[in-house]
Image (cartoon, rainbow, N blue to C red; front, side):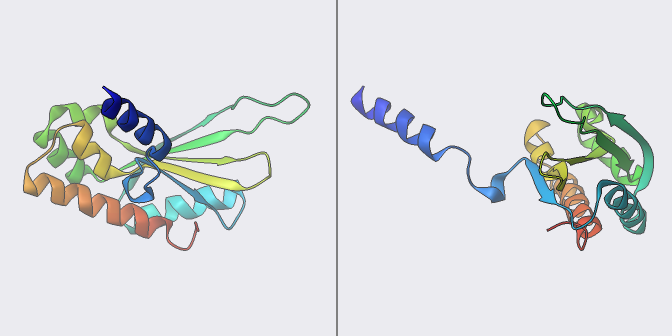
Length: 150
C-alpha cells in the first residue's frame, strides 16, 4: 500500500511535462494575430491543405481589460481525410483539423493545435498506412508553422 501511495505522489509531481508527448502544441508567433492568421492560411495552402472555414470566438476577459478574441482556422487535405475516415470513422470527430490563434494578456500572439499523433491514440489507429498519413499531416502542419512561430 505504501508503495502505491509513493507511486501516485511521484506521478503527481512528474505529471505530463514531457513536451514530446504534448497533445496540444502551443507556440508563440513573431507577428500580430492578423498577420499570423494570414501567414498560417497561406502556408497551409502551400502544404496542400484547403482552408474550409474560420471562426472568431470571444474569449473570457479579465475585469478592466479588453476582450481577447480567438480565431480558429479549419483546414483539411481531402485525400488524407478520406483515408483517415477509412482507418476509423470516428476520425470524423476531429476533422477538419484546427489551429487556434489568440493574444494573451501580455499582447503576445499564441498558436495552438492538437498534435495529429494524438489522434492515433484517441481513435485507436494502429494500421501502418494510417499512421503514415498522420505522420505526414504532422510534418505538413509543422512546415506550415515554420517561420511563423517560435
